[in-house]
Image (cartoon, rainbow, N blue to C red; front, side, top):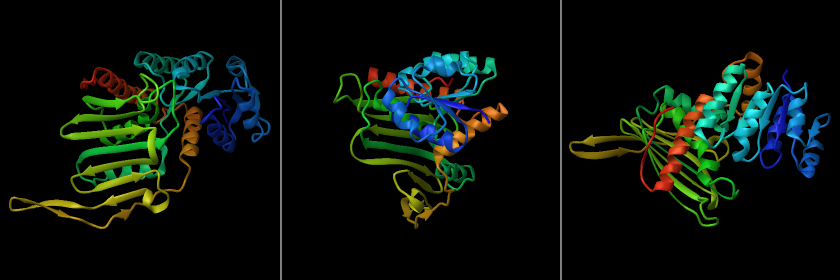
Length: 329
């Protein structure tokens, strides 16, 4: 089995290290802060610790690198890892620049290396069950999707709430709709630091009558992570803040006409069964499987580029205060 080195042991890196360790694939961890390395290594016997990223890249026992550093550093670290001949897993977003994202994808393909981006919710068993509902036609023709990703913190200084939170929801909505929107309009507010939006609301127009809305904020009184899909035959809600059966619900509501008057037929919500498995463990296992078989990950560079194209357009709209056309990559 391939050995993975995890770089960045702040908020999310220890979770990656734990899961790769459980899968028997963790070879090393890396962080410039000694206290962070010490805290993680206490729980991971037999794992090497590095203060220097170059030293970890130089290790012949490390086949792949998982990057969980601040988003602004993702692109440069991924480029160094690919140059060193390592397969790369990088937390979302892949980077903050479309041209750099294209270059990373091309470099990985040229070298025959796996490049995977951590769009975690694509591997959530409840979301996968929602995908099956849509694919089986249970919701009919999609009409619109909206998502809330709201909480109090974790507040960033390097990136705004759009870039920190929205990649999750954009990746899910793109997967369900099956195409990139043609237009984006985003508004927001910066309340703590000038130029760093604490909250944004994005409207995505997919054409053919399909709409999407993404509301993100780290200045919200309670946690609400919810994706709602509305179709011509039914509706569904993936409520990630919930637990158990209420996490994924199907609403077979119907809307019809009585002569020229619309009528609503409300139905009882139905919980949708899904596999009980940790999404991050599934994601890490998928990466290892792709490395072993030199297979294309579900959240590969191309998928990440589509998400980045939407994020970039939303950011430009936020800056300009007007709608922005989106060219599908």
